[in-house]
Length: 94
Image (cartoon, rainbow, N blue to C red; front, side):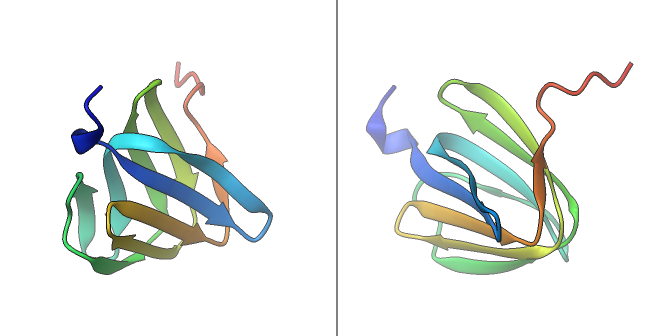
């Protein structure tokens, strides 16, 4: 995988870091609607509402349910800081 297409994502809660890895794409629940982040995204701060974060990671897709929070994107690093988060990647909806 070309390093030019990846960036670092951290999902952080008061309990600690829930996810930290290099990723290709993130879609998160902003207060103004869902938004996507790719490598070389402009520096930004987003307010988050509760919802699902979808991650296209090197090792496979991941999904997290989050409470409200803040996302910061800066210099090919993204931090999602939230009151609570849960990995829902392997939840069977059937």
